[in-house]
Length: 134
Image 1 (cartoon, helix red, strand yellow):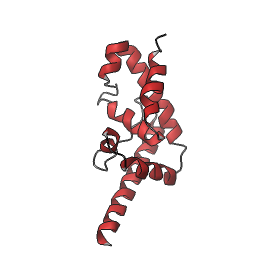
Image 2 (cartoon, one colour):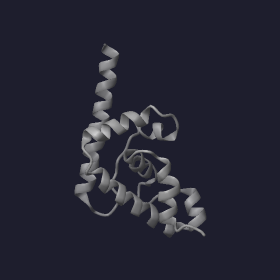
Image 3 (cartoon, one colour):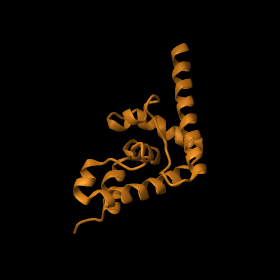
Image 4 (cartoon, one colour):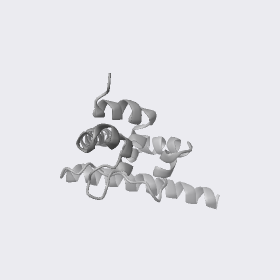
């Protein structure tokens, strides 16, 4: 039985990522400048509209869930994630790390995610500087 696009994205793609932060950062890496999502494999398998809807729904769900997590826990997830190799480690690099809200006009969620992103990056840079000085 073929999974619907939304179920497939959550079960096969997002479940491969162990932390909520990695899931949100990965989805944000798929987001285009216009707010849509670029995922070649899903678009090929399901078509553009179902792909956009599936990733948007997952983005909204994971972004809202992340907005309820304390910064300390988010940073712990970040530290655990960057020690693993692969594409996710690249996505979480302080120079490329981006947390964006789905394009829906929710300015509060967008601002909250920006603050989380800025906080995590600032902590990572501070930790890196502290270790270099020591």
